[in-house]
Amino acid sequence: MALLEDLKWRYATKKMNGQAVPEEKLNYILEAARLAPSTSGLQPYKILVVTDKQKLEDIKKIANNQSQVVDGSHLLIWVAWDHFDEAKAEEILLRTGKERGMPAENSIAYKNMLVSKYGPQGKQWQADRMAKQAYISFGLALAAAAEQKVDATPMEGFDNEALDKYLGLNGWKSVVMMPIGYRDEEGDWLVKHKKFRLPMDEFVEVIK
Ligand SMILES: Cc1cc2nc3c(=O)[nH]c(=O)nc-3n(C[C@H](O)[C@H](O)[C@H](O)COP(=O)(O)O)c2cc1C
Image (cartoon, rainbow, N blue to C red):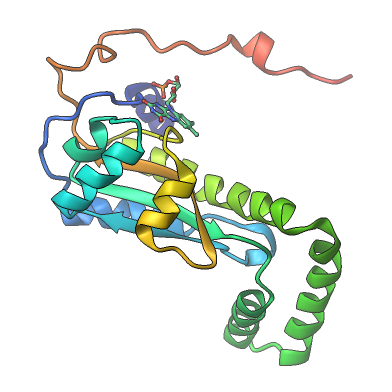
């Protein structure tokens, strides 16, 4: 029940009031994001946390001048591998196997199987698949923020290529971002509007 109430409370905040999110709440949100499942446990993404005011101003310009980027206290940016990175995959599979006391050959064999499946699909397909994993982590972070009564705006409204260039990414691509902070009750036009979702009988179809 509590989760559903939190999800009803949250909304894509358009105007934040500049109040800072405390460190422990930030860490809670990041921990929820870290615990997300991912395909083959690859975790082919990471989160960049930006707080520097000048950098936020620069990123705001890349993000269609959306004010939440600078009015939130932290900007979380999910970046994902820009292709199926065999070396990174091998490393994480070996580390996972080691932690579980499994032989390295098993991890290498599994990685080789992944290479045979991902390889023929091409780099764009691979990048898309890596980005999909990032969205799962993103969704959990959004829910965790709501649980902490921290406002967050899910954001795809930015120029990915320009942001990648600005951040100097190499081997990674930006996927989605989330400023966190607190809603400006007076200044946010959306705060008073009802949440709209399709009713359950349209959203769910039971196949008989
Ligand atoms: C992946 C994704 C990208 C979004 N990008 C933006 C964005 O760039 N700017 C914005 O103000 N809202 C953005 N939204 C917010 C959606 O418009 C919003 O989540 C949707 O209308 C549902 O409303 P709610 O989040 O307030 O419940 C995005 C949402 C998602 C999930």
